[in-house]
Amino acid sequence: MFSLTLHRAVGALFAITALTAASTAVAADAWKPTKPVRLLVGFAPGGSADTLARLLAEPLSQQLGQTVVVENLAGAGGNIMAFRLSQSPADGYTIGIAAAGSMAITHVLNPKGTNYKPADFTPITLAAVQPNVVIVNKDVPANNLAELKDYFQKTPTATYGTAGVGISNHLIAETMLYKMGVKVPHAAYRGAAPVITDLLGGHIAMTMDNISTAAPLASQGKVKAIAVASIKRAPQLPNVPTLDEQGLKGFDMPTWQGVFAPAGLPADVLAAYYAALQDVLKQPGVIEKMAGLGSEPVTDMTPEKTSQFLENDRKQWADIVKAANISLEQ
Image 1 (cartoon, rainbow, N blue to C red):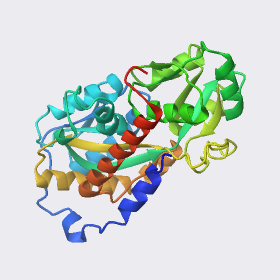
Image 2 (spheres, rainbow, N blue to C red; image 1 turned 135 degrees about the vertical axis):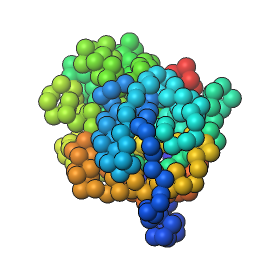
Image 3 (spheres, helix red, strand yellow; image 1 turned 180 degrees about the vertical axis):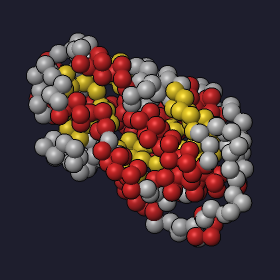
């Protein structure tokens, strides 16, 4: 039913004719900031978006010649940060890391009720993708998807949580539950860290989280990893089968993160950021650190390709929301 997957979408976009070397090269007189740059993140410290921002901030500072300061603006599934970014001057001194929740899903779930719109941003590039993992409290009597379904059917008081209504992990979890044929109440939090706190404490039974958070917890025995939500198993959790392997055929829904600026960013500033981020994302040290977190860098996604990807992503989420009857109240 849900035919579009992120890996396939990115792969298709990579086939688009690339910009010429001359158009992406950093010229000697390229734009450079003359004061620190703010890098906004829409979630609390400790989550995958915050971790990625802090990993990229130092090498990006070196590329730009100015300090890049990470600023967390948590809440509303990343929408608070997105609104602040949309209202910032388009002068290159405020950029943000955002994902599908604020850049695609929000406008599908509530197209007339948001205080910003897709046109309020300049996409710079996609930066990373990560597998998602279904993890449960270690006392939940389930070790695979079939047992988890049985648990939810027999435990109507059980709930699951994510870092906000409308973020990608929320809709990925809802898609999974819909295809499993069960309905489970959703608890929305202000970030990934408080979700994990309540999962460990037994206040919620399950979450759908990025590999960077899920793998260490599962490896330490603090939670149980039930399934990987990508088509291939995750190297960090080689013994955890995918949802596809456990009966949800074709299920492939990783998380992505990209770098954005306010609409109207001057062309020379956009070119400078794209070139700087490409250099950062291709650095062996950055690639190694991202791999350690379970992330895969996305390179050569030009602003044009990123805009097309976002358009396709919104269409995918619209199909999912309609099929699974997902609403803001979940």
